Length: 458
Image 1 (cartoon, rainbow, N blue to C red):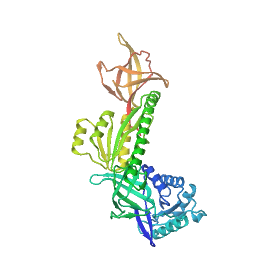
Image 2 (cartoon, rainbow, N blue to C red):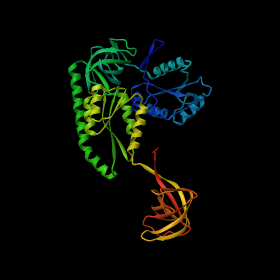
Image 3 (cartoon, rainbow, N blue to C red):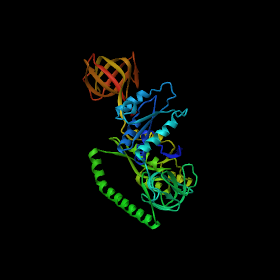
């Protein structure tokens, strides 16, 4: 969150990441804002994430202003952007619609002032107002656990005035505000509709939770306790009803392999983004099962949980202490730490590929032409052959082809060069070849020698 003052008025910006992993964050952003500023690159045009952001804004009933960025680039084509937007029912003013577009360049700063003025104009049209003489309410944008400060929450006040020392309840968390800072980190005593960071909650709330300031500590604690109780009941009900279904669906689907994960992260938003991205990796053969998530570093209880469930622990922007790492090593629990969300997704995807049943393809080693046949006592029919291409190997599989039709598939029982056993015979050489439990070899038959190679899953 950041704040800008223009013409004596204040605009609060919430910036959400553009990558597809952060769908939930963008959806949250759309629901708690008054105006959505859609940034579209003039040289790239409308991307899948842009379409998704349009859908979020429409679902939340939030008006859109389009900032066409990178106008400084020679390849900038704002008309293409407008055309692509119209395909997604976003009609810009130039095209007879009601969506404001502002050409800007983040690099040179051109058009930024115009964009800010357009936001204020839109706010005026929408008659956006808040009542300062009431208890504050709003949403939790982000929350994290700080080692020295305890639970830290970033709140967006949407109505009322929030004061330091007030009691608040946010989701299942409650507490009294011990310290309140603005987006620059400056301590403030009271805040109207803006984004603030507060200390004093008993535990880390969920990003997206609504918060309310209340008159007394006791009220806040009671509300939080009741919500916790309700949540506990829901979890218990969910667990008891799904275990049998899980068992049944596993039998129905055949053997399903599960990749159990415990995710610990620095902030709630990143964990949410990770969970939704990893759950999308599910396929018919492997299921990603996230058994626990939490804000903060990896703890001993996470190691115990991983031990009983056979899970891998993923730490995002957190590092385990030496004691926890030692315990993990002793219990043979894998802790993987990351700083980039895409790396986690790639690694889990690769781990899943490793768990999948291998896929094979056939590789032809060589072709052998039968030129003569001999009957050998106690062995059967042996073909006197000439290797026409590639090579023939003793441990390879073979296919007998007669007039282009596959007559038999099997294994080589014997391979000889003159009277000696051979491991392989190369192109241009003659050999004697016998097929396991098969005697119908005739002059002119072609024997294809092949083996199966494991292929990497895409």
